[in-house]
Figure 1 (cartoon, protein in one colour):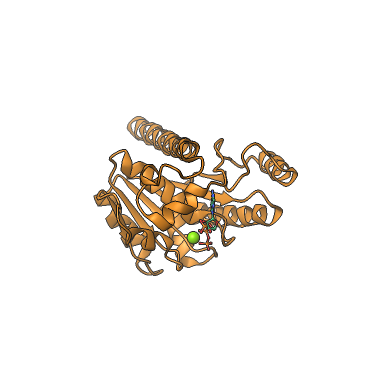
Figure 2 (spheres, helix red, strand yellow; figure 1 turned 90 degrees about the vertical axis):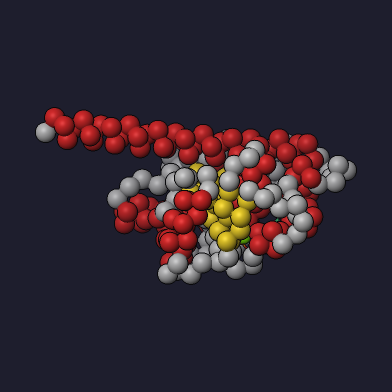
Length: 238
Ligand SMILES: Nc1ncnc2c1ncn2[C@@H]1O[C@H](COP(=O)(O)OP(=O)(O)OP(=O)(O)O)[C@@H](O)[C@H]1O
Ligand SMILES: [Mg+2]
């Protein structure tokens, strides 16, 4: 079952927020979800200790370099989606989690500094692709974007990414009060107080992100299946 990791060596890029939105929306649709909370700040574990955590969503404590691969494999046996929220740094644990991923999401705030964080994350992914001799799909996710405004620095980063043929999510996660509130209230977006500012927009935005994650994972899985069928055909002909 697909493993989706959230990676950016830049602290505060929006990894834990995007990871929790993905986990809660998938769980609300009825999927069995495991979240590996490898962020030393433990925001998702804190969220999980509050009321209203969906029962089909489990949170696993921070693994070590030695245990992370086994923990991911075990979670894959139990769940339809395994989500890994990683520390805002580049270390072996992050590299091992990338090596096991079917999709790496790279949250990036639209600023120059964060753009560099994304470049570092992509370097790490490329290293793991070489080490594992397989392609590891990834895409940059703009986070905390201001609704209608696309700032000049965001425009610059987007142009650079396009030039470098780096995939970018069409959906950008906007700066929304609901995405902060979910951590203090617990539960899912839908369970937040109805007077939360622009709650409906926040839910639509999160669902668009989840929809894109599912399409990327499915597209990769189908490509892999086609690849293995082609390999089998070649073996038969040989
Ligand atoms: N889309 C958003 N809307 C509103 N607030 C956000 C959004 N994304 C992140 N934040 C806020 O920004 C801060 C950092 O976000 P978050 O903890 O998700 O980043 P992170 O990449 O996981 O950080 P770290 O590297 O420290 O683990 C938090 O206070 C969070 O509530
Ligand atoms: Mg975090």
